[in-house]
Image (cartoon, rainbow, N blue to C red; front, side, top):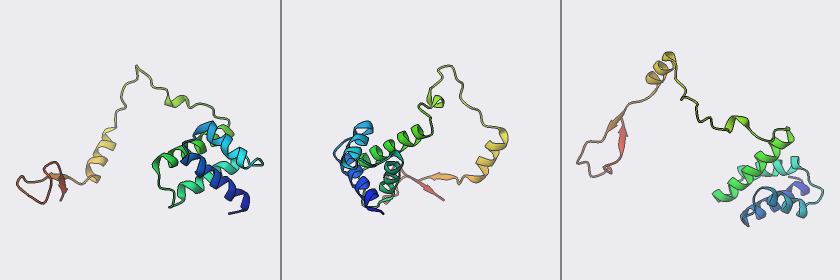
Length: 127
């Protein structure tokens, strides 16, 4: 990585580790690297998501959310209308063809016989 991207990456991970999220995290990164852009922050966020050393789920979620927000805003998408739930909407129905295909591609799961001490009572075994 270049020096600028390294600084942005470090600021992003540090800010997320300190509990910053959203606009606060973006402002923190921008303050640490004043000549940054949304594009560079998103690039650094993607690098952080693939870094095996960043393991904290909360940090990864904050970084992921920031990357998605700023990527979508750079595309001109502010809200996702598809996420709005329709109270009157009916559940989708699978076609008979798809149902048949799903049945033929799924392995059956057989219940565990009672009394097997090596397997917990709530487990199932795939045969």
